[in-house]
Image (cartoon, rainbow, N blue to C red; front, side, top):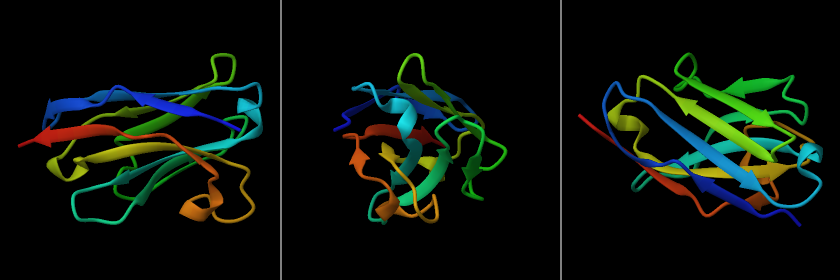
Length: 124
């Protein structure tokens, strides 16, 4: 069992930055790929970024590529999402997830554990 707790969300102006953190419980953090997803108002949950267990393989959604950076610190059981050049369309609830991937890392079903989400609002 893995419990995930996100933090770092808030209100920011367009062009600004935020850094999200996700702290994981348990001793098996390094056994899981970690992902970030988001769900905007009235929208379905969508993939944002994922990192492999070691952090050696990273993938981003096209919409955030070049602006967002995912990283993990296995010693601290924490995964981060650095978000730069934020746009109003980035406004969403951001969710951290953990999974032992067997397929595409952008698929929601590949992740077994989810945090409660943290709100990010980008004003224009």
